[in-house]
Length: 379
Image (cartoon, rainbow, N blue to C red):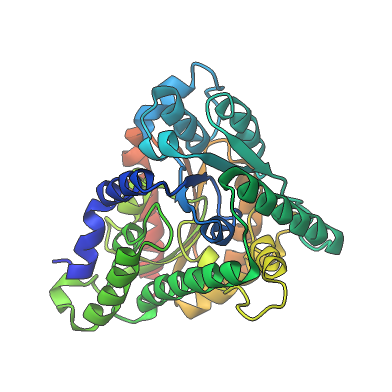
């Protein structure tokens, strides 16, 4: 049985839609985002509401494949399919979409998306340890600030930006605290339950209140409602898992296992640090924070491996599972590094390459089961 706060997120999409309608009625702009690299703080400071538009529904893909190649990442195709079918109300209500130059598939998809939706594209420099790259990224955020100000006829003051930074930091702290409950020997949540505790919109007051409620309720959650402490402890890394694309998570936890840590963009990755709330230049502080998110599009991406090693110890992972969507070349290439890290840590490793279709569920379940048998045999 879920806690009262957890039940709140059962109707997350419906509640987000009601909020979106209220925003439109009150003249509050909605800005769509496609990636964790887009600073929600800038959008909030402009008086707008940022909403995530990444697609996770396999039913949207056929419409996208009439324009896009079939051998493309399912997240890219599903996101575009929503536009083709006009099936994402948040995209249709957005006054602006802020995209970014991360992977090649998304960049080219954004060109087609821009034919129907007003768009601004952030150019993300991809040399992770180049000081000049951070300077260019800071300039990109200053451009975004100017675009938002011009589009919505507002001035984004430093004070407004600091207020937005404090608000986003609060949300990060709450979500991180929820994720950290899975460090326990007897976690009060499953990985799938944790994955469901997020919203498409950032910093909705009711969501923040629900996070606080869950944190207060979890310590008294009945043992029978918690994952079995004897479950295999899984560290999941790789691609993000958008809403409607959770089937791999269900497979991972379907055989006496708990995904105790999700090191990805829909998990703990964007929550591990906070933006400096006292910086003299809050926009520069935003640039510093977002630029150092360890995504596989960066080169080199050593920070991701360092974080994985730390998280494996912190969450006492017994194995590492890497999820790679078909045609996600950057995570596919990096998987060799993850495999090497797992070997050095003495942890069994499994790479899952798949898409949104459930057609390979049986095969994946067999491979996952074999991984867990290896873990149990070594206990």
